[in-house]
Image 1 (tube, rainbow, N blue to C red):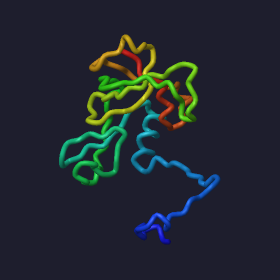
Image 2 (cartoon, rainbow, N blue to C red):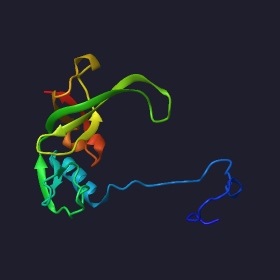
Image 3 (spheres, helix red, strand yellow):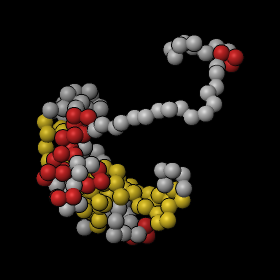
Image 4 (cartoon, rainbow, N blue to C red):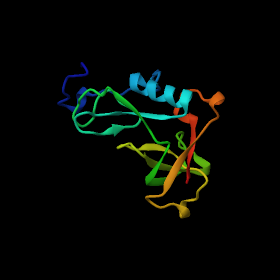
Length: 157
């Protein structure tokens, strides 16, 4: 049965027992690469602005997710912004309990319409509130690799 064929009877389905040998390599794409390169080289946050609807995407995109217009205007936004939401993470990606919980927040950088999801530092859950101001703490320039981990965390202003 081909992948696009419709299953009409349960007897048409099959099971795969064991492990699937799947490998993948994540690439940030054209816009993501520019975002990470600017972060690495200049310690700046870059985004793209839609000429049609005015949305500023950070990280930048190559097309507007709302109106599908091509995004060609790059700009720099602030490295500080507002806490839109947050959560405390107790379980790691592998499903095991973390030794120390991690606080993760949604930060809307000043000048951006979208949010960045990243770790929050130098805070405890009981001191957080929506609308707090945060600023990025970056790795030293010589240790940056052009990855999201170049941002160590966001700390309260």
